[in-house]
Image 1 (tube, rainbow, N blue to C red):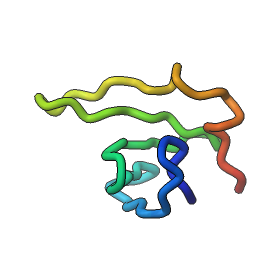
Image 2: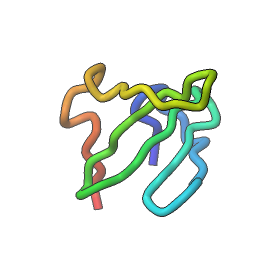
Image 3: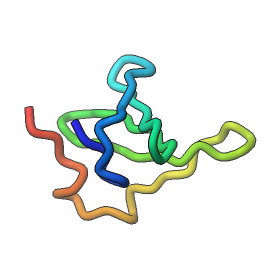
Length: 62
């Protein structure tokens, strides 16, 4: 799997269907074959980045 944001393969699993890109520091969650991307803010909250990507960019081939 590659990060849709930076195309890095440096992805770590942080939970069930949750991943983290160590290159661009984006958290991803996988649900029904689609990724949802979030930026981790300084206070630990998450901001959605989904509106920056086309739907086909967030699809994961099974």
